[in-house]
Length: 129
Image (tube, rainbow, N blue to C red; front, side, top):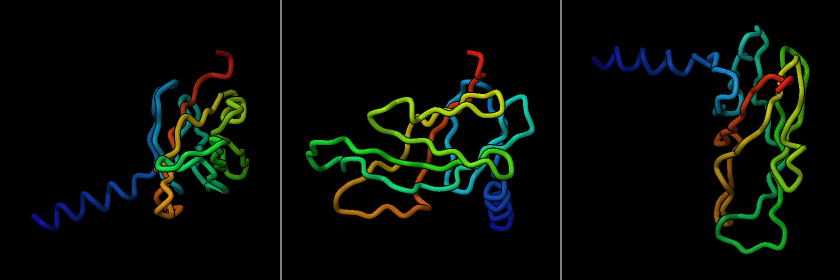
């Protein structure tokens, strides 16, 4: 029984991508990828280059922003930013609109977030919409 549970857990860890429906919210950990619906191109959550969002337990004069990097296909890198300018959270690539909807965990002042803890929520839609 333990061996079966271990095998299932390892199989789940190895499954890095799925094919969601267009418009569906998709959560990705750093390093994970998803196939663009209706295409063979993959979108990989590559990095968080900065996270200056105001911690949830602090009062700030500026809300801050989180800057993320995604790799589309084998080499095309795009930067998506959550912050005051909503336009920076969306990019058009390969005929699809890719939008960064959320980034977890939200910062708190008493803890440092490891890059491996980040989970990005993205939405992929048709660029024609």
